[in-house]
Image (cartoon, rainbow, N blue to C red):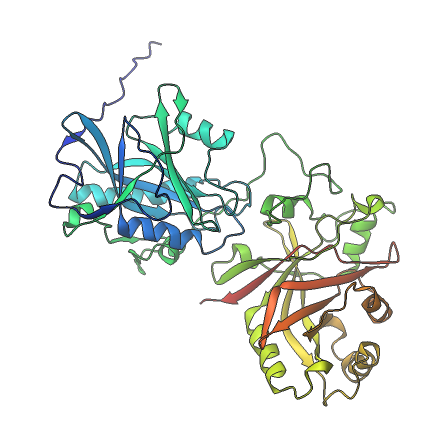
Length: 478
């Protein structure tokens, strides 16, 4: 069978004056995020101010993971000098791909881009895919080897670029192909314009997640779809039975859904052996089947990276690198801060029992703890002794709350360092590995969640540990 090769359609640049020489564009300048960057001699890049601001807003939603989106616009030429106008952007929801070291643009996202492009082309057939942007939170503007491979393989046309944004350092820059190589970081300019064809366009979407993260798109309530959110696993890899820790703990201490999947165990009721202590311990728990809030469209989650935690000792390194995922309802933060506000003697601190559910998401093969409510002390504390206060709390409510008891939380202005004095009361009253104690630092009547320290007790090794590096704050949005 003969195969006829069809030549790829060549994109011709539209001839009109570029910003700076054209009265249709005003306030053309380099943004404060890259004031000293040089410009490419082969392609000038201009970004609509609305698009540039939208990109930075999206990047700041969660600075613990890489975010990204698609850049759309026009390809022009002015006196032989090629340039592009980035007039539109589509942000990928973080639920599609949440990872501290990479962002993966999914098939669902490219379907969303295609739907938006169809609307733009109805008004201007010259709209093109100009490239992608992604974030590097707190580690600078550069192109990794994976980024370069993506640019060379997919966006290698002379008018296409890659944009990298660091929302922590508030820096950004663009990269493009020059022959077979990726250029060094290049500068760009932003502009304002009264012309609607050069500004961010309004549109519609059928995807509720796209509508949530793209303010310029309205959701069509009569035709909305449920987006497909795949879980990314590296090619040619199989999840290990135990946690491999040959890799170093990420220097930015960001959570990874890939890591979370590595560190989950087998589903309930699956066969286990006596030598597999992790599985044996998990099997003792009564898990509730439930969709993880990270993958549930009705919830919004924020990752809290804990500043203080203890690395596992060498003998336990394969056993605990990433304990069970914790989801802390945001309404509980307000309840605890209110109790603190009404506390007369701040030195006593606020103590409460944590209640919730041990859950298992079968579709994602993830185990997680859902902290949903509190049990407070019945009367004002007369002693700062945590052991006695926990004893009294559990004596009054322990039997009633036994099935939902996930641990305790203690608010204080002065967190004891080290936490060893708190290990004894914890392991005396809380014998299950999934039960934890949370010590939260208070500052100006607010909980400093990043300064939270979490301890737990492992009955198999008969050791207390504080290896928790992350937790999630979540709330129901609809």
